[in-house]
Length: 72
Image 1: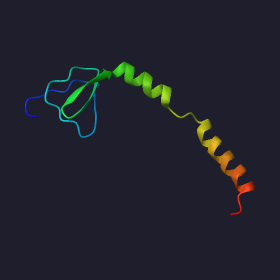
Image 2 (image 1 turned 90 degrees about the vertical axis):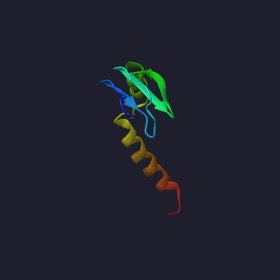
Image 3 (image 1 turned 180 degrees about the vertical axis):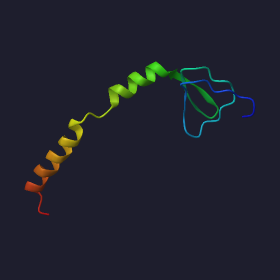
């Protein structure tokens, strides 16, 4: 919206309507956009959910094992 300021280090959800100023270091989303969490909490959440390098190896091994028992 006109005149609204979004601070630094901010995440705004896709499709959100920002109607008020958002200070630095916040995560907001919705229609209208509302505060969801701090950027630090968001980073911790993403770190917790990230896929490690072993994820790729897991799927390769799973595919190999499935090919042994599936007819195709």
